[in-house]
Length: 200
Image (cartoon, rainbow, N blue to C red; front, side, top):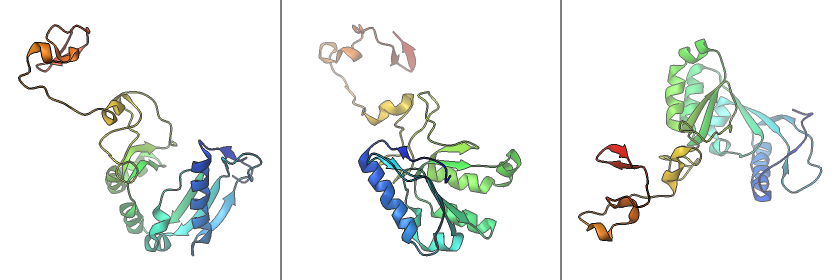
């Protein structure tokens, strides 16, 4: 990590927020910075990778350590027991993703952890790294608050349209007063769900 050059974030404001989050880790009691990437050389939106370590006790006592730091930082929480690991997972707020690294046997042996993470994140990743989003039917890039304002939809994938529409019902409207999308004649030639059946 120390040899990793700084990377460019999406915007200067995001980078500023990232640096503020890193600074909180630097100043927090019981948190140790164990590695940092190369310093930025140009641009206001460049960020260095950061790796911090803390104990499970410190993490559970300091709610600010649970805040998301969007960017290339990692906070490792060293737990003294399986029970403390589960307690730390329960303390998390809503996340876009939660990643588990291990073997299939580890996964089977820690079903309780997975059950907790299912309530905390919109997408569970096994032996991979987020973001890694793809526009497909199965993709969810959303999660419980505060990861998103509404965890019932996704910002990436085919269901993302749900963030930008709301249902409206036209009950007992005469045909001439219906929007073209709803007229029996279907003048726009749309595929539609009619009486539970997709038809044109």
